[in-house]
Image (cartoon, rainbow, N blue to C red; front, side, top):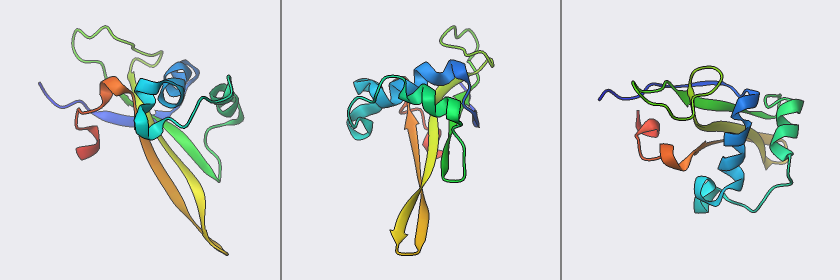
Length: 116
């Protein structure tokens, strides 16, 4: 089996249930990514305001379905794997840097996406 090709794209509305799982589901968020339950609708409100701005953003990590796979194929014909997010962090009185993080759905972890 060949390695899956992953890519980044803007988050679309049909991705929102998956994005919510990365932050609100104990299994998908994992012990390292679960910081308590968010206000219901929080992710949708952020999506409607725009996930990308001058202070940070969020992109979907997706892959193409494998031959014969009938899983959760989204409206764009790809499978949501997780998200890539970034935001500014103040590091001094007059400086900042970017904090960049990746969150993957539990079933997509351990497939080597971060090692290639």
